[in-house]
Image (cartoon, rainbow, N blue to C red):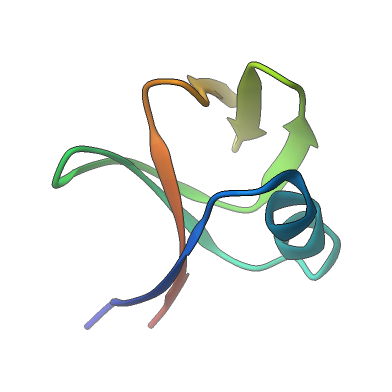
Length: 65
């Protein structure tokens, strides 16, 4: 079962998770729309597993199995 640990809300949290290659879940509301390791972070989006997610519309959470 996947556990959600912590929301990533600041730039430093996102960059730290990317450097540590942590698995991140992407949510809109309570629905998970993506999951994986971040490969790129910009002011407006986060790229995970080749797909871009808009930071304004999504929340990002550290996940562990």
